[in-house]
Image (cartoon, rainbow, N blue to C red; front, side, top):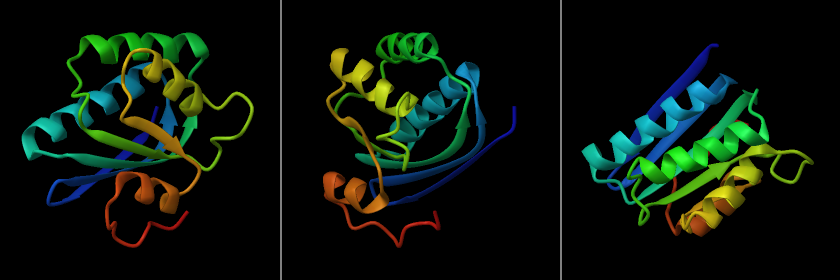
Length: 131
């Protein structure tokens, strides 16, 4: 499956833009890359603009949540995912947010737009990428 992963950063803020198709292996690799950027670049906040086509099931998302918990993903870093389909029935990012909240990840949230994510992060973000 094709996936485009674009990463930029300003000070302690990382911006990740995703396009393409997402399956469970791809999702795990994305979160691992984000974890590495946090560690290597000293990030305190991340915004993930997710424009991917999703091929994940509830089971995949649940397993990804388990893996994230065991991967030593930093719990103090705020991660805001922008997904305009957040309120849609069966949205896997919204389901993933619930799974992660249940696992104690209180700083990972999904938002329907860039501005709401920016407000929650409490960050001055660069102009948002075209939707």
